Image (cartoon, rainbow, N blue to C red; front, side, top):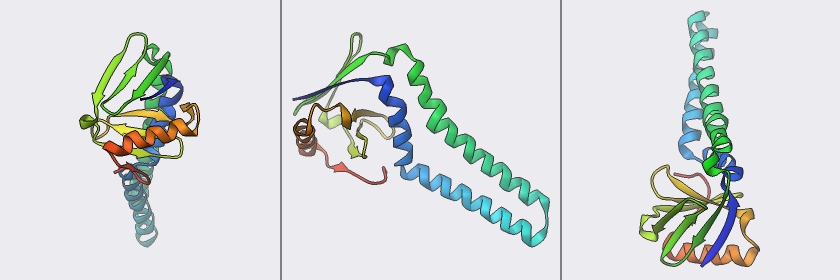
Length: 165
């Protein structure tokens, strides 16, 4: 069993931002949006129709608002929520994974973990399509403990890297 302890609100906002920056869905939506903006600007220069320029500006503002909301405003609520402003312990074993604090005791067996993903700062254990538990890489006591965590996880789920799908 591997146990790591960390203050959830110190990591969750960064983990959500990291999740979005490594999410295939996030990149596809932004690339499509910026492609629309570019197409509108090119069409404006070809036709001199200012409506096209306004549409491009509107789409660009929507992309910017979406980015700020998903990467900064939504994650910021974890910093101010008193439920997350305490120490949590995640215990990862061969049978179950437990996330506990003073007043929280959540448990899942490995069959409920759909996938595991690693970025340079976090491990994500997905319990659903967008529901996940985080394990901050810097919360491990040493490299040996992190390797033990990876061994336990790899026995049940392959730890993927790259863009989260």
